Image (cartoon, rainbow, N blue to C red):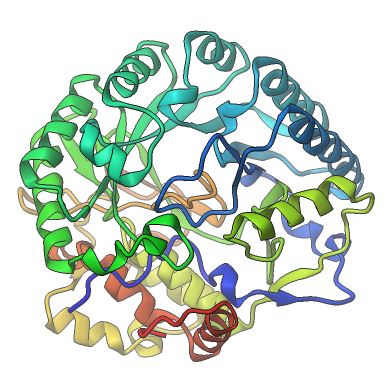
Length: 487
């Protein structure tokens, strides 16, 4: 069994998006009324493209290109501000990429100050930014702190030189260690590090050496990502995709997860591990997926506005992404939506289920019933099979909101959307230390992943893709010279 089919960080996938006509953001901005929404800015610039990266990003763009992009961002912000509801408040703002810290200090300062000037951020808004070790230095870190950044996410991937070279990373172990020490000593509200497992030559010992080093810096969170080699990336062109082995990757996952849990990290999803703050949980709140929205700035990121999901066409090759960036820089009008998908009732339901199931606390039966007027196991009878197989479990009202019902219980929470720590679609809150704060809580209990099911997230999640979305994704893959056997 291949346990690594697809990372379901959002639904539907961008490959299911298609050209749209006569669709305007004006007609969907009411979905951003009120509080609780997310703002995302995509900066698609990198110093170099990693061997496994299939994200919307380009390497080799100079200062002039980035300045032109920021100029276009101002035009976009001016138009968005005019149509935002008066009541809109963004509770979090994420800057992703790409490598945002590739920008020089002046560009970084301009970016953050410009967005603050045009967008209604909450007074204590969480501001999150992604970085890489080579682009992380003291001057930029201090500037981020002064500009109100609360969370920094750094992609280290490994501290082992041979593994970094195999992945095509542009930093070495020493640089990564220096950056890790710098960030964790700056006083940010949260610092997290990303690591990759599943390299053909990686051993449990080499993975644990990296994780031991990471834990020594006391990061607030750690993410463990299985290695995927998608069509068109450099590792695939070098013939490395055939070397991946699902069983090998899964053994490394088990080793890494066990080690982090032993070091006091609570496993929130297949990928996310949060430092335990007290004896009963992490001291953080879960939020249950609702129907708030997200607005994306720049090009390459997604906006979620009710039924409308919008994004520039999905490009992974450099030339295609560069053309989209150049078109964005020339653009004068930003309210027309030319690419995306309009979700049916069925797709909204599937999105809700996928976003809950793969994270903690799972799916609240009562909240699902309130939102959709049905029992979740009736709408998704496959769950009964998964319960019999030991991949799902039914949890009653004694559930404590963080999966800590006993020594061996796994814990689950929302995972990170690679475009940033998207908090969109999160409404009623469930405290990790127990109890429900708002509506839709645990009456009727939860359905969530078992420890075994947690490790199968990338196998189970794709099985919830609808036939229509699967058809669109397969059509896109065939048009782009690839074909996923699962689809």
